[in-house]
Length: 136
Image (cartoon, rainbow, N blue to C red; front, side):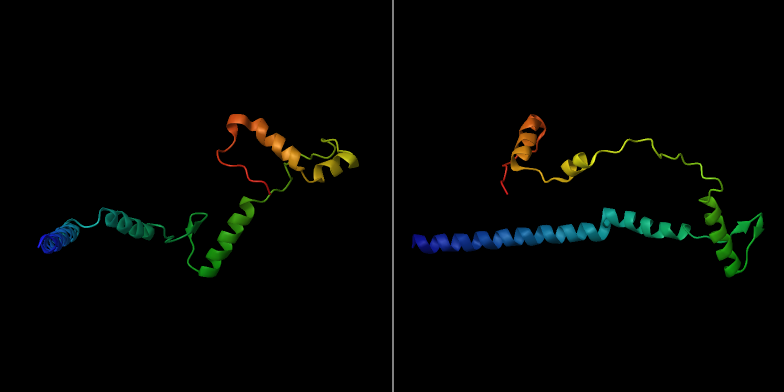
């Protein structure tokens, strides 16, 4: 008899619990329908903002251009001249740095030894990332 009552109470609890869930889901839907999603307004504004990024006309020397080919040439000419240098104004670095010897170059290209890696990590002390060190 006690077992049957327990099952009935569990069944009733489950029904009440599911009805509470349904109530809150419906209430959330109702608020969403009335108030809308707060982010929707932002995304609508962001997509409509693109309409303002349109070139309606191009003027060269205060005269509007009407032909597409002329506009393309004017744009290409503008950007071609924008990044063009007649006399290069960059400094030359020839001979500014001494070159290294072949032995030093060979030392730079050597693989690191496991001992060198271990020493570098232990020298970091508190600056290293936390976690286990894994040997490869």
